[in-house]
Image (cartoon, rainbow, N blue to C red; front, side):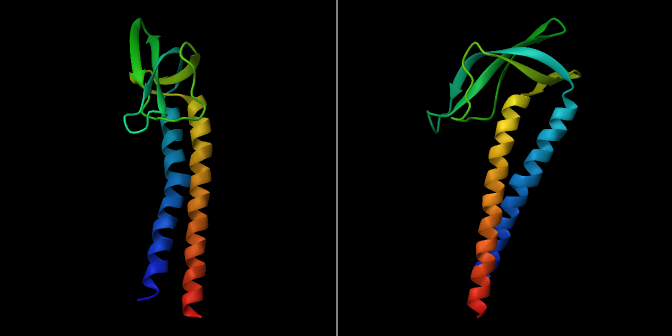
Length: 136
């Protein structure tokens, strides 16, 4: 029974490590491959999070094939927040221009995700050590 605690810790931290190191970056790469058309977008607003007023998500406006689009990012952050009026190159899906990704934001977000993932992997190692110590 004493070994159950470290095993749960290894499982949870290991699963989170895989999620942050592999799954999320892989999904982002797939979206960037799907979105092959570059458009110039303007950040027209910063939405603040209802849960944390210091976290912001940009609202983009861009045009494609004569149609205008206004899209709010679903990623709120307080790091590397772009200023209103800033222009960014977005990648959109030419078959569905509502689908977009911001490669510049993705790059910084993926760095943070990998750091979190490696911290989770470190947590799994801690639980391995705890499991070894319990068995000694």
